[in-house]
Image (cartoon, rainbow, N blue to C red; front, side, top):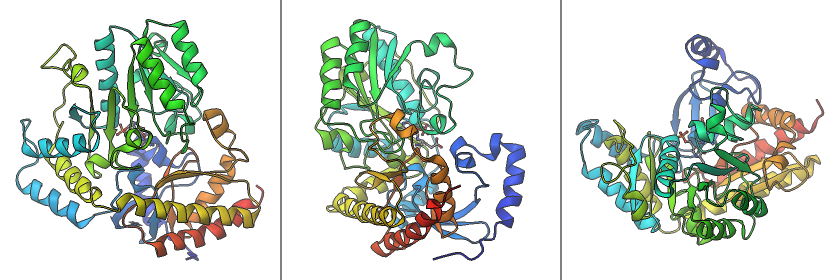
Length: 436
Ligand code: KE4
């Protein structure tokens, strides 16, 4: 697997042009490799479990475009569906049957979603869901969790995870203090702090928004009773419970985390997988809440490309394949195989590693204790993760360029692909083990 020399000339030239055109040379911060150093390869194409850069280097891909590509790259069914949709026209700004078909698939998999609205990103989905919650309750405050990332709308960039956590900033410049102050952020997996927040603001909190399995501080599963407790508290205090399932929706099971844990949120936010890699988001839930959304009710939300036919076609083709029997047990077995390989490599290299996994999403944390919240995640050895990352890249394995993200497997990854990753992990781990 070792790449004796990985040519990077074309990537460097193109990235230089990109740096003059885009902030940091990228259209989303984490892509700039600031957390791991170096200059990112410019990707030319993807097929199945692999991506290839403009210098011809091929990588087994465990980023999966940050989650959407659960079928792998350029899945033939999805390509065909998008091609057919494109021949029918790209966008109409009018009702289409494809949006109905995708919504019927989603609501059949997630019965808590009685009605939904498509948007074009996860950010739009969470922003809109919180507006509905505020409209429904007449309250202003939102409660989120440290390290939780729900997109870049102003009131949610408070103690956010993912890119913001990776960049070391606990909130963003440009967010008015008055807006940030309406958002409470407490430690994940700390039910007492949720109770305390509601005790302090018993009639002010419109909603609690939570990643039911955190993915944006790395993968941090909920402690037993944590989600159940939030459900009970929000019900007792009349606040809306919003599950941000942009990552976990159709990732950890057909019914997402809410099915896995048997908890019915009031609203759910989706994205990523439901668009099969094309721009998409969705929010939905109880009809009583969604009935407030314009033009039915007073909560305004709109979007030129909402329900875009090509995104809908990609989403329909993707979900139809996910409805096949055996999909999630298989994805889980691939995840287990990789986790066992990571464990073996860490033990052989004498490296402290916490592997936290749910199904086909996982994070290897370079830390000596379980990671239950953002503070624990921050104790990870991000320098060592950076060395590990580059040692894998040099061996043809492309993982997230940040300790605080999730690795994703897909239905396109075979057991030999996972074994090839494990081989590279073994070599990279011992390289990363060397100090400094
Ligand atoms: P988008 O606006 O990026 O489509 O979705 C925002 C979002 C909302 N909720 C959750 C749980 C999310 O994970 C995300 C976006 N995830 C990040 C990385 N984990 C996307 C990658 C990026 O920002 O470049």
